[in-house]
Image (cartoon, rainbow, N blue to C red; front, side, top):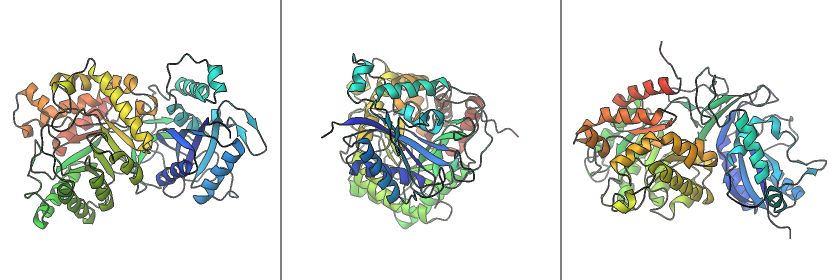
Length: 525
């Protein structure tokens, strides 16, 4: 039997539910004994070569296989056919799934139906960008020649990363054009293909215009199971907080009057949700378990009784049926019920550490996953052993990277992971400030691979460290301080993608100014 060898596969889709097509493709690879080790971010790219077709979603995976190259190709073709691809259709035309072998160890293969390395990878930015995400430098004394003999693709990945860096994929670029027209919530429809004129300066976790014929415009995105996309880089998304709890630190008991959701309570909660959306919320985050330090952990049944009826009620409301809903939970059972009820995103403050079933469950559900940094649990997170760091931003970033790698190995695609450094969780007031000051360093130096430019959520809203700075003892009086902290998370290269807030209306304006200043997203008329 042939020994296992490293391979790099490129994935693409521009028909049907593109995000689901790629997610199912990765599961099919695993089912056929192809061990997927690492995923890239997800990119939307205008179609190359053949005009008048939908934009593609492109990704790449690093994997190992014992299959011979020709057998591997046969398996990939079978997976494509199972997804509905017609191999007799127009070359470079639209297809629900495209799987290509980019690298097979260090081998060079020249056969009638297979050439490896892929003959056009150098010309395809939509291949180079995701493949470069797979490169993580390793501290090893092993020479490149020895690695090649061992069946590694590290030398090839290093080359792709260097080429991508040379053309600005991982550096700041000017004159950026947005990949798609956005609706009023910054969401991409599953069928939109026209280009929008958005110019400015941003990291490549935003968008980049590319040479003609290579997939002209690229944008980093996160797919929702509905087929819509969350697009990163152009502006900051606002996540409104809906706490269906009696004991949350800022607004406990205000949304639902009783411990579980009654009809009258639900009517009130839906009205609050509608107002948040009118005030500018892009995402609504529903939680039924308080996560303030020292809070009491309720049963999964009680938590579900608080949030599931509210999610269903919002989905049944004509004004809320299409809003992006997130469920704030660290319970796999509640996560499953929330997605079944209509939630789009799972927001887990524990990063999968408080329920061993959470990461496998999120992988099974196939939804975006907010992975937050926290040490300890609700009772112990603010103990000195959990708030001590020699370098806050560096250690938080390294621990986030480790947690994201765990999630990826559990089957959660990297393109579904949204990182949260956990402001106010397992940090001192000084640690929170250090973290906010150095978000750009956390991104650029502590994180690795595609996670350097992964979407990032921050949650400074009304936190106690803001009260210590301002002298405001009442959380509801800290909204002005929240604006300042949120703007700081966007400034100086931090470029947070989502800000989780209580007071959407008052914070929105500050975020809009920050986007105009730091993303070059001027909307002055």
